[in-house]
Length: 96
Image 1 (tube, rainbow, N blue to C red):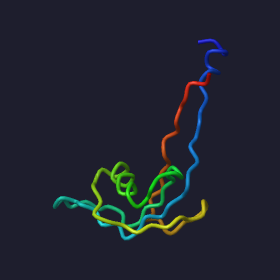
Image 2: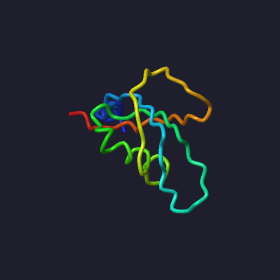
Image 3: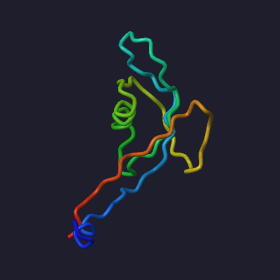
């Protein structure tokens, strides 16, 4: 692939916001799993956290969620070692 061809693809990042999910109630389905009660992660800024926040947590940890609370936090927010930080995948689009 030539340099001109490789420049056709441009990395595009959606605007994100850092969210602290806490008091997470996981659906462990009787499994003995140690899942976090607090998760800090960057999500797309246009995400409806009340309806899609559980999907984000479930996608990240592999278990469904019964409920949670959340707050938008500053980008340098840190609570403890138990906080799990993760990033959303970057979107790659074909540049025209």
